Image (tube, one colour):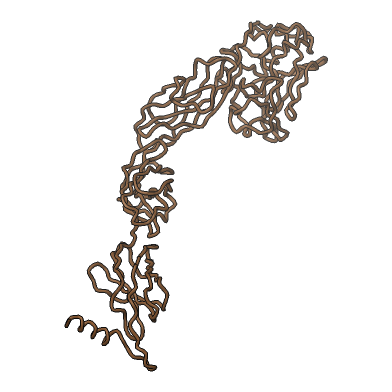
Length: 513
């Protein structure tokens, strides 16, 4: 009975007050159902239930771990939410709320709620493996820090402690805990790199342990232009410009196929040793009149690097005989590409092909080949089109090369093995033996030269039956320093030797070396 009386006395003394109009006022009831939610790295939101109708407001208190509660804010009457924007990362907080009015504060506090604010993710950096494209690493996220992962990957630099402020990073698909893989590219060979995994949430970015590696890349190389093309063989090679950071080469060579992008998984490849620098490769076992794609390759401990892809078309299996001219020289008995020895000056079957000076048998020489006005940047154009131009020196190559048809070892010698283009002097010596210096003399000679005509250098039009134009290997530079080539021409009433633009298509009669 005494205890009950004491409690009632406390309520009268501490929880009640008489107002000026004589009414008795009491303290408000305490709020209940307090809840706390982590919103971001620097905000926690609180909500509670209001159990009174006479409060002036609510006061919020907070403590960390085993510390003491301190007031951190207040709200007005009937307002049951509060945002704490003074929190720190990765910290344990406990909250409680009480109501108050002019009499005093509620006798009790609300329930206490405890939580831990979010942290940046925790993760480890995966081991680094060298691959052909550079390197592979990744991360293993063991904690998201209490907030969803929004980005993850690896970041690298040539200096320690790289951060995501750098552009040298990956952004790998996926969220959540666990391991992920990242591809490290754009490296410089023989360079030390520092790597860290990273993961980002609303609290910020966490980093894994730092690893280092010395970049060893696949070799960098170019493919050598294809030369000495025959129905069954060709020559190419490559030049290794970068060893990728190691001098250890297991093999190098060229690989070819009738499909684009051949790789060393094919059996059609050469093995040309293991050193650095330039190398030559012999391509054998080809089919006649077939287009092939070629790439140089070199392999080191990081993998296999490939040179640029080139293409070429093998020449036809050309059947021909030989004749000995009045000068005692041995010639082919027909024009290159002709199906037979001429039976008359206008025998269409004996006209043969129309070569642009210096080009190989890549298909452009056919009278019906496609036409393009895009000049070639290399000795072996990467197409079979007839290249036209009206700009001096009217060469199919952007930069003239005088060495393409010089002798049996000329870069693009289109003649069969052991044969070559005649010089203009050799043509003149043949004409000197003719009884008639015109088309009649040309046909009556042992060479039986037909009026095969030519293909225009500017438009690609074919003109036949009126004259015969035949290339020589002789090159000429005019007074304006433009490079041309000499050709031999005849018609009804004349024989002529002159210079012609190399984009013109003329016939070829090969002479034995």
